[in-house]
Picture (cartoon, rainbow, N blue to C red):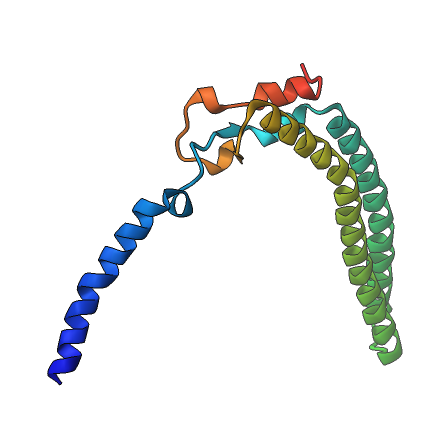
Length: 174
């Protein structure tokens, strides 16, 4: 028992001493290799001011309008069928089954159209984001930044680290 106590006491003294010696001998292994340069950008501002964003918004709005018109037609047809059935007065199991199928078809169409719109939006936005990301990377490399964060993710930051306008210049946005 006393052997284990002696070993525990000895290890409590040796382990910290070894760690301190290692940190003194190889400081680069325990710390970053020099000062880090960190910048921030207002990604949303850049994205909104891209000319491609305006074109994508117009295309997407046209798609939304087209989709809304198609869904309105389907909804009107469904409502008319339900009203006609209700005016008929007598219950009809076959007609009710047909109306349920038509309602299910409408709901499926809505989901499909929403998915198609989301996919179209992604197709339109992805190249814009890639272009911005490339400009951010270019400015970061040119200016020697190790990391770039979005302004929305920071709690505090000095304005001198904001490279939003440098990125906008890189993208020729005024």
